[in-house]
Length: 240
Image (cartoon, rainbow, N blue to C red):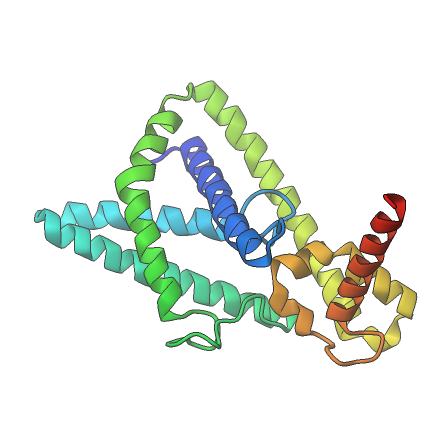
């Protein structure tokens, strides 16, 4: 059983590692740096929760099954199921709250409502294998070596940080939702500035760019592309 401080440190470490994986993957695809994740900081909480679920389920399976091969297979299967369920409900809740999909697997084979698909479920299984067999034993030694007093203070700091960042991110997302969905009730300048202010969210979750697509002066993709074009022109003029 983990202590409170150990739980928070594991959660933070795996959330950070998840952010690294997501950011590298998105940056390679877009050929530019993309700060992935819902939070403004360098953490993806869904990876933290997912990793903890995988680790705990693996421990449970190992305690029930004595056969190594069977326990290994069952651990991977449980990991795939648990993380896939987590991803589905996270995507479902985000869409219900913000009236839009934050990611969409609709073009992938074997998808369910665009929230999950076979390809990524199998990928989570592979990551679960690396986590249980390689990453967690090493990270556990590091976390368990932290003195109790230091670990407690670090956990308190991280808890407050996550709460503040989550609150700010939710407020930002709700404000963005209000402006996007009620575009006809706000001035063009306010709309334009809000889109640019929260461009990190659109770049992190490209599916959101289809909101208000095709509406004159309200097309998010056009606004962002227009801004980038202006920046490129300005930079070229400075160095000519």
